[in-house]
Length: 131
Image 1 (spheres, rainbow, N blue to C red):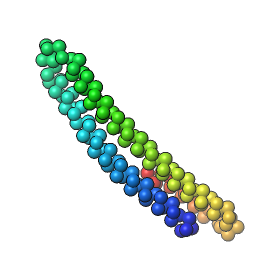
Image 2: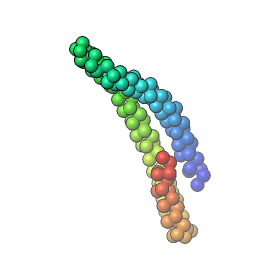
Image 3: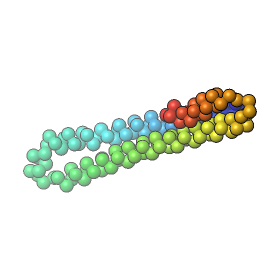
């Protein structure tokens, strides 16, 4: 069984490392992009009477929209990256379940039904454990 699981385990480790690097960088960029949004919102709320007095609402709103759009696009990138990992982990767990089910069918005569049930249940539980 080790021969079957070593390539899958290798793929899992590579995908996890790739995700960690990408996720760390995306999270950093998201934090950097969100800071100006909150900063401008705070400044706008403090200076709201002055902004209204000079009629500069449109320029402040335009600037806020630009900053918010950047922050939202990075948040969307983070969400897509998380979904990418979920798809890869689901593929790994499906591969393990397929291999276990195939081996159970091949060696059905030699295995105790209780052991078969435990092995298949453990393989199915793998997808939630990998997250």
